[in-house]
Every structure is written in structure tokens, then in C-alpha cells.
Image (cartoon, rainbow, N blue to C red):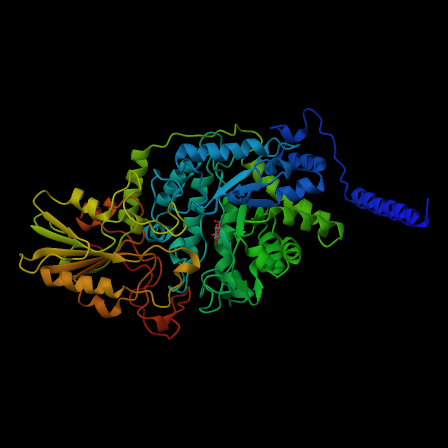
Length: 625
Ligand code: BGC
């Protein structure tokens, strides 16, 4: 052997030795699981079952449980069992190719079956945003967005909506819902106002708990949670400052919450406390910042306030790409978030890199094994509580469409708020001879359902099955003696006899999240012109606002005879007609103050405007007839 070969051989041997060493240090002991391990014993306590299962898990299997992957990012379905993923989700619009109830069921069940092929057979959660019904799926009833539920102020009704949503989810195999929303909106310019019940922490706590009870209630076996609820977003959302968004496309969404810890504890914490007392097992941290720090990095708020002080024993999940926005470096971000108390990381994109990073952080002692164990215990606690190890994966129920439609219609009617009723214009008289109906939202279920309906940013038109537009509802409820003439543009011709009443159904186009941040939420020039045209051909005009938030209408209000806001009612447009025609009395109340102008923003949860002037309508205002 010459000198060169000797050098080559010894270098190769050295490299091989180093490689062996690295492999050895990465090696994780795999414990053999006996045929009937304690964790499978339904009679054992949840805590014993958790400890038993944990004792068999390798570090990689634990990290897998902390990993939540968007289904469209899955490189290969076998990664679910290969990595032992903790959960999957459909980001909104993440639908199966066959977007039907059956298509969903097949897709979700396929993922569940793959999960239990892993060495330990740990089942997964499958999560969606069923924030107004399981509105991902054509054919299901779409309920009003949360702001409408807030306007009903009725926890029993909200519980019923949550039960109906639970059934829709179960019918597609989904067992985790990113709802209800606990944000408290103080600035109507924010694009997520309609996802909230109210700016009132007390009402939010009461309705939120009712929703959690409905969603989690297992009709067959009370011992188990049915669909896991997720109050979101922890904490301080709704009080971000305008123009502080960390997203260059947005203005206030993902912005900075200025409240100090005392204010957060006093205003934002009580509803979360109530949710924990109601038995919630997962909570989502928001995409906002507190000072300069992303909430997902706030150990003081997550570890200390939420887990230690409130005694939350479930798991904390991060929101979308939030963890990766903590720093510019994915490794550091993952370390910071996990150490701050995030237990499951939502990874819309690259989960393989995350698993590697966390493994490396543990080997370097930057994340302790006890922190990993704590996170996994919390996730497993929720899985045992939901009976994932004990019940048949197929928990399909029959949906009673007629009952759900009737419920949605009732909620729509009870969420409508009457704001002006000059000379008792409403209820509309059955003896009215002629009604004009106009406006882009009159005959468009897509607009009345708002965003988070089939697509993240919503849909346009009347193609949603089993739905009724507001116009169709008016036609079905009005008396046979009343002629109803519709023109979306209010082009009724000037030579015809005036209508008794003109109904203008106008408002906002769908938007989701920061895409709905709007410096001046008000009616468009087209809508205002349309109302003017309608006034010329009608003796009286009532304006029906289809909107996700209060709009600035101070200057126009005087010239309208009637005004009602129906929020984003969803698929049961006939509920609007029920209150218009007096089939049902108005009972809705504004769940938040209605500002007179933009200078009043933000409005504190105590109702105080920024400039000290009076709002147009106070929170809980609502006329009766
Ligand atoms: C939203 C969350 C939602 C998540 C998953 C995020 O963009 O902020 O509210 O639950 O997406 O779809």
C-alpha cells in the first residue's frame, strides 16, 4: 500500500467512525410494547394511560405528536404513520378532490387509518375551521357567523348551533374544530370582527362556554368529548393597534396588542378561564404581537398565565405559520415557541425540517426532554379524553337537514337587530300591494354567508345547495296579495306606480382575516346611489345591512325610514323575512357598540370611545315593534 492509499483508507475509516458515532448518539431506545399495554385499558385512569404510553415512546415519536400538518403539504400519506404525526388539518379551502360529504369522510378516514399503522398506533385529530357550521362542505347548513350569534345573546341557541355543527363534523369524520373565537373586537376596521361573538368579555365567556358544551357533548357516551373545541386566539386579539400589522398586506390583523398584563388579565382572561372550567382541552395562540414579541413566543403568557395560573391541562396549539414568524431562523423559532409553552405546532408547510430541528434542539439541551414530555402528555390527555383510543373511528351520525335548516332560520331571525323604525314601518303589512327589492346582497347566498364558506375568502352567487337567499325568503313569506319586484341595481323605471316599500339589501362583500382590514368600513358609493334610486320609486325605504361589522352610516341614517342589520346570516335567508314581516318579533341586540365615525376608534370594552364622543348606537341597543 503506497502512502496515498494509506491516507485515503485512514481518512475513510475516520469518516466512517464519526458517522457511526453520530448514528449512535442519535439512536433512540425503542421499547417493546406488550400485547395488552395499560394504555389500551379503558378501565385505567387517563393519567395512568398517558404515563404508560409515554414510557414506550421514542423521542421521534414524541416530536411527531407535537406536529400538526396541513393535509395539502403532506409529501406522502405514509408520512402520517412514519412520523407518527399528532394531527392533520384542512386549512380553509383544503378540501378533498370530491368535495362532498362522502368525499370528506373518505379523505379523513383514510388519514385516520394511516395514523394507526404507526408503531404505537396513536390516533390523530383532524382539524378544520367550522366557524359557522362545517361550511367547508357544500350541502351542509351554514349558520350565521359568530357576530350574529352574539346578537341573539342566547346561550341555549348557541349550544344548539354547536350541536348541529358537531353532527356535521362527525358526519365527515372530523374530530377537532378551531372554534369558538374569543377575540374582543374594539376596532371595526379589523377584518375579523364577524368571527367574534362580541366585544363584551362576559357575553363572550357565556356564549363561548355554551358553544364548547354543544360541540364537545358526546350524545352516546358522556364520558368522552365528541368534537374537540378550540377557543382562539390567546390572547389580546381585537385590541391591536391600526397600522401595526407584521404582515405587509394587512393593517391591523396580526398587529400589536398594547394592553399591559394587568389589562389582559382583567379583560381577556376571564372568558378563557370559563372555557377551561367548561372542559376545553385545546387553545390556539394568536398571530398578534405583544409589544415586539409574537404571542407564540410569550412564555410569561402561555406557561405562566395560561398553564400555571389558570391551571390549563390541555394543549396549546400555534396558529398557521405563526411560530415561524418569531425569528428569521426556523430552528430558533421552534425552540422559542416550544419553550414558551406551545405544545403542538401548526406547520402548514415543512414538517420534516421541524422534526429535525426539535430533535437537534433536544440533543443540544436547548429544549429539555421534560418539556417535550409535558407537551406530549397534554396532547395525549386530549386524545384519551376524546376517546380516540377507545371508540370506533367511525362516529358517523345522520344529519337531519330539515331540523338544521329550521334551526338556522330561527337563529337568523333572532340575530337580526332593528336599528330604526320610523312610524312603525316594520313589520311590513301583509296588505302592502307592491314591494321593490334591490341590492347586490338580496339574491346572493355567497354574500350573505360571508367568508369561510367553501373557500377561505368566500364565494359568489346562489350555487350553495340547500340554501335560500334573502329575496327567496321574502318571496316565500310575503302575502299572496303583495307583488314583489326585484332588480339588483334598483332599475325599476320611473313611470311606474311607486312601491309601498323599497327594501335595499346592501352591505359588504366577503373577506377573511387581514384581507378585510378596511380603513373606512361604510357603504360603497354604488350602494348609496342604489338606495337613492330606490327612494325615488318607493314611498318608504328600509335598508337591510348584510355585513360582518358595524358600518359608518351616520350621514345617511336620517334619510332612511327603517334600518336593520342581519350580519352574515348564512344559508337560511328566510329568517330575515320572518322579522321583516312580523312572523317573529325582533329580539336581537347589538353585540358591540356602533361607532358614529372613525375618530371614535378604538372603542374600549368599557364602551368608551377614543375621542370621548357618543357612539351612534350603544352595545345592546335593539328596537322592538
Ligand atoms: C387563522 C386561524 C385558523 C387557522 C387554520 C389561521 O390563518 O388565524 O384562526 O384557525 O388559520 O385554518
